[in-house]
Image (cartoon, one colour):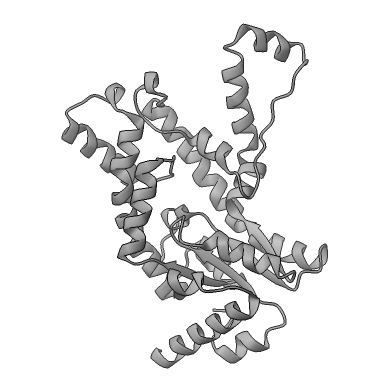
Length: 290
């Protein structure tokens, strides 16, 4: 790790951290708290994915839908209208809408082959965005004079890495550049995440092997064909399984590459001073148990 003790963290002229964990546990909340202090640059992986690496996919998909409407088709073909993506740190809906959900096309679902194609696009985009971290660390200081840096990752980071491989290319690079911090939730957090998701199911990205397994299990359990799958029902059914699948992967990332902070402790952070103290305590506890 780039900081191995509370003193090293306290004395660092540049503090560089990366948050990982399930979406909804406070990564972006704390990133915003630190950014608002004025000394921290906030690099959002999801925003980078949506603007740099999947922007054309998202816009082309919107154009394809518009081309189905004769009125809009004529305007597009004559370059009379422009279709763009209004993505922001607070609104990442365009990425989720493009990823979609597999199932019955009549219910808004995607054929599984198309869904897998978009999942692979996202996997590559996320890996590229993660490996851009060093560039943004330099950019934050060189261009904007921010002394400190936050990399705010998406929940799917654990799907594309092998935390038990000391040579994993993504984790090796990220740990060389940042202190990797897992925001760990408890059973109550998990129950709340499941409740929220059940109320408003959203597209997710899955490790290909995991997707194959849960898709086959769902079809067998429901006794339906791929074209009969209700897309929202499938992602609701899959969500808790995805949480269980990711938890040990996050744990291994924290054990082998970084530190763990509970979501409750992170939610108690109100300013940059609180955050510094929390990380000092975390590093001191880790050193005492080493």
